[in-house]
View 1 (tube, rainbow, N blue to C red):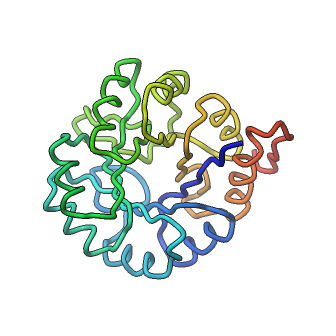
View 2 (cartoon, rainbow, N blue to C red; view 1 turned 180 degrees about the horizontal axis):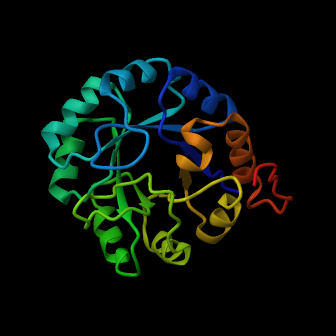
Length: 229
């Protein structure tokens, strides 16, 4: 069975990062300035946390910037090894980022609002190392670019995943209780979670363990472990 990668987002401290890594996370997410959403922290703190993360764990910097120069400056300041573009960017911008940051992975987010998101995803894959399907809405007056805690239509995400020739991450309202169904439905390269592990806003170590366990058992026919409802 292919290994489903696990990205735990909204890191806010060195302890959060350590708990996530100890539980088996393959990647950590760090949220820089956003118009809305959860988990936003200062870039100086992001840099301090990333400095403690083993090189075997991917570090995703979530940025709402859409111009290459700003994004490059953010990466150089934080030393993240992956840039997650949470707003729409152009193919030219993504190609400029690749040229300016050799060795840094580019992940373009597509917010799944309906079947029409498939065409956006096909464009988003150009110049990207992966596409991440989330549940925001960048068309609102105050853009929602992640951290909504909402589940979108996984059937649409499954169709998008089958069409794309780059890895696809699934995000949006995932938690220990629904992640196994999400993995079985979409078959993503990886899953991404923030608020589903944070009752009251604080990372819950038991939820992290349950989430990781349920991802690992989703496709092997074993019983899901759901000790957290």
